Length: 114
Image (tube, rainbow, N blue to C red; front, side):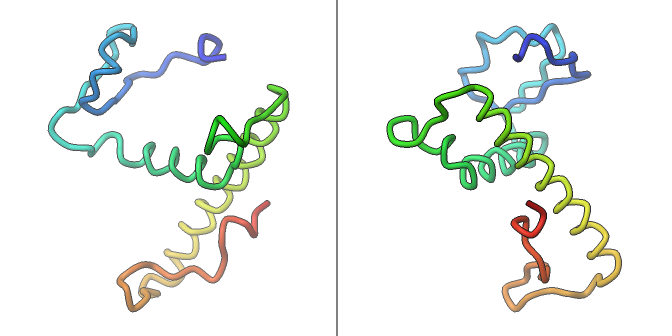
């Protein structure tokens, strides 16, 4: 599956030693100072693991068919992207909607886009 994806312009990773053995075709930027280039994707990966049970633990929940995994990821990515687009539009429309904890408040969740 990975070999069939188009080549990215750049690949950003944190300072983890595990990435030293991966061939990034000379487009690798290893960031050992901060997480500026990796924090968004790491947050997205955490959301995927949180909301798709089959990606949480190998021992108890797993997908028995590859097609099921692809269907779940497709459903999640579509809902996640629609949620992201709606958040952006909502923030433009209501720029001062901040909760008492200092976070932006949305009257909807990602589950509304499933």
